[in-house]
Amino acid sequence: MKTLTIQVTVNGEAFCKTVGVNMTLLEFLREELHLTGTKLGCNEGECGACTVLVDGKPVNSCLMLAVEADGAEIFTVEGLAKDGTLHPLQEAFIEAGAVQCGFCTPGMLMSAKALLDKYPKPTAQQIRKELEGNICRCTGYDRIVKAIILASEMNKEG
Amino acid sequence: MLPQFELYRPTNLLEACRLKAQGAVVVAGGTDVYVAMHGGKLRPQALVDIKGIADMQEATYDQNSGLTIGALTTHRTIEEWELVKQKYYALFEGCSQVGSVQIRQRGTIGGNICNGAPSADSVGPLLVFGAECLVVGEKGQRKVPLAGFFTGPKKTILADDELLYKILVPPPAPNSASAYIKYTRRRAMDLALLGVSIYLALDKSRIEELRIAFATAAPTPMRAYQTEAKLRGKDYRSISLADIGKMAAAEANPRSSWRASREFRLRLLEQLVQQAFTTALQRAEGGDL
Image 1 (cartoon, chains in turn blue, green):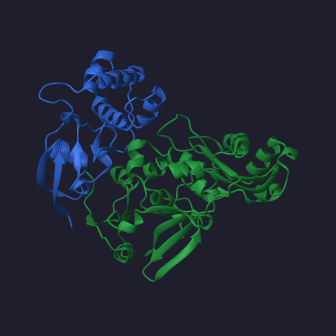
Image 2: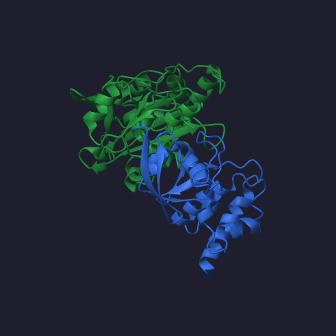
Image 3: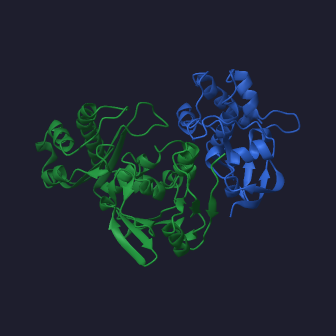
């Protein structure tokens, strides 16, 4: 087979599309659905800028075929804010100054989302380990770690 | 965009073997295959995605036979498996240091083995636990010790029609412990510049069993059989750590690459063997892990 029709749910919305088998999930999100929040960085699984959640788990969307997402629930950075209200992680990234050029931020946020689902009260060490696949060339990571701790504290209050 | 290819997604093992025999490139997690395809190093006419083969996903433990790990089991599954942490700590250490969370979520233990890289993080720990490979082809199945699986860099004993089906890992002795030390230039997303795995079973201070394996110290993952044989049965207090390091490093045959020179790797190996041995010893004497 060279093309396939797939059904995927992206940020809660169902899509049915026919795609080439050689299209990556990243290309599907950006070019078919025009969800350009997810970034193309290295295209080889090193940088994490293309991280999305597939059935709740973080994966590099550049190393997965779109057809492999058939039947899956995909969650991208566009799904974080609800009705114009930012997600606590997004608020915390702003509050802590965890964004500089911003290119890694969508991937960081998705890995951070998966991290908080796994460890609602993470230690700095857990954050650094779980975010090892997301490279940031600007911040030095310190403020990203602080932002995630901040978001985890917001979780408790909210 | 990846180059064009024909995609097959069999749910039947023998169908997958047949497609492989016809020249289709096998893909599981895709964390090596798609990287090579993006980089232009691999341009397959056809891919056979084996993730639909259900029983290759299963991983179980039995106290008599040990672990039976379906080749499609992900590193993340192994990493998060409490039993592996309790009984096969070096395997936890290996699998939890592959790539990143994202890579471990997709990458499989079978893929790590079949890719045949001398640096594979899961292989050294599996070698010291005495793992065997269950290989299936069109004509039947065979069992091969993992130590005999590799024939060269990126080369394995798999015939054209054969797939690695399951990995069998015997249960460790109750008086044993293990350790995997991975040496890298940065803490994540790096290949092992060197890796040392040790399995050690103690009867008080006597070394009842010792197995040592190296990553990136030869063209294939390897065991240090001579050192193991010399030390088996000895009282560990009667041997100097430095000697163990020297003896084991003498069995290695690392190459010089842009990551490090052969000379550096040999010196480093002496140190890492000591570190891994001490770690395993402390764990064995501590009675846990």
